[in-house]
Length: 285
Image 1 (cartoon, rainbow, N blue to C red):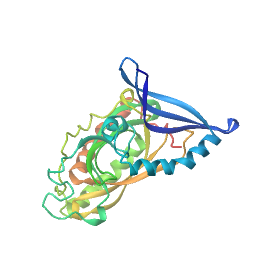
Image 2: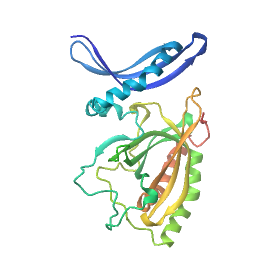
Image 3: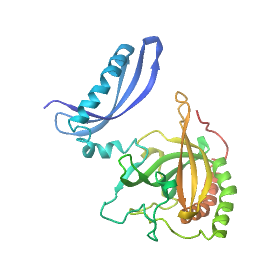
């Protein structure tokens, strides 16, 4: 039996202009001759002319594969591995026959303005990393996938600086007061189907399956009164100096999650202060 390799994600690791090539890392599941399955990062340098040839042939390969019904064959087999690098690590696939989470707890219709927006079901803080001035944060998410399916999972390993937490402590209580004044201190969104980790049950660096990201901004866009939730902006940047730029997304944060986050923040900040992680260190790239 020969060794089998199944690639489930590709990263562009480095451009090497002097060699006319780019270094790709193929995150792969490898089955050895004895049947043992392991995961491995396979680095490969691809010359410019090879990249050009791939670019030319890929559209037809994708088209033919889709026409043959091969655009989903390995989805189940690779789901666990792919989840490690996807935007949301899928933990719980909701049963289509169960309660539709995109209806309100009251049974009302979901507002179209927020149709594609993911929900934050909980926020958990993990390891304090003093040399970065940050703490690891996980967001438990209910996501709308490209296929329209609803899934619950965690976006793990986001480093958030002490200064960002300070801004949250200054701004979020006012948001909570506004929601209370509007009678929005209640649950309108359907609760999580799977378990939501406690505020202090976040990730540790050693257990992360990928390099952490920097949570460079956490802000409030508006209050979604129809959902008793706030629309939160979360901006993520790379900590790798070779990768510049950032990405951002809006999330719905229900009142009860906001309230729990506000209560947890002072405890987390005290822990960071005790470990000397309250000084700015890490910068986005």
